[in-house]
Image (cartoon, rainbow, N blue to C red):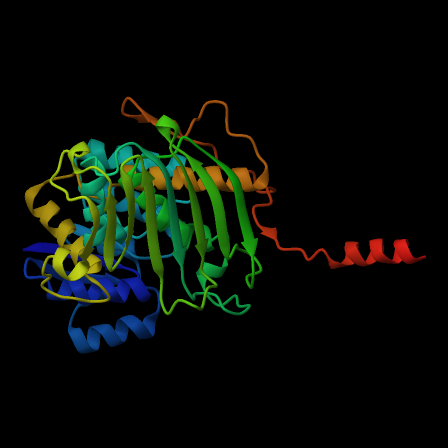
Length: 386
């Protein structure tokens, strides 16, 4: 039985708690949160041992693994402390706000031989895993363009009530929504070499961006666009979609299905048929012991538990792959602010070591508010008639 601890009882923490308590090969032995009412209620009705100090929990409980589900600015210290206690770590996304810090943690986990995983759960959605199989199998021929989209109704009015509305806490559409799309690009195609035309716009938020748009440039001349908007209430919940165009056809994939068009099946290294092929999540998904919010949430915790039991540190979503996503986000922030890329960093992982970008200066303006052109137009109109 794998002994697990949990740090953080927000939305994702509560979800992880429910999944871990139903896993047949895991035992949730301790939970930490700073809200007294929450942990007192949890202790009363579940019997799980609770803490308000995660460091004490790490010292006192002989944990095999820990799930960290706190605001992003706390991740680095908590992850480091857990690794130094010899505990395997699952950390929610985004991993770290500074890619340099994230890389050091990835290196530490590798040196200690510890399982490390980050909660980019779309890697566990069966439709996106099928898309990877098709792309890797050459179904599209030579890929030349893609589009990654993420929309949802998170911020629909001005508010500052949660950490997601604070830049210093790791909030904003870039890290909360666009990071999923970036990670899928990395997972399916590889890490972009550079970015351009990044726009970080505010709609309702004061301190963070509500929509993100950028062009991504990958090796081999592959280009793509990313579009993310968490103030989009035409979607009932988060909706993520990827589209790909290649010399042999096109592929569209979201959480529910894959839509593949193939010109010549003989081009691919996997069995295909010409024309359109639709595959639905009902036929692609594997059964989960406990279904909560979607197959992917249970699947990623199951993957973490199994990795600990087997000692396999090469998880589907490692610290290293999460750092790659953080690097692309950092490139987009610099591009939006009009800052040049650091001379020593290209955003690529080469020969086992990462070229890591330096953090942004505190004075950098990263959010571009939308400004209406009407005052300037009115001035021009008055000048014409005067």
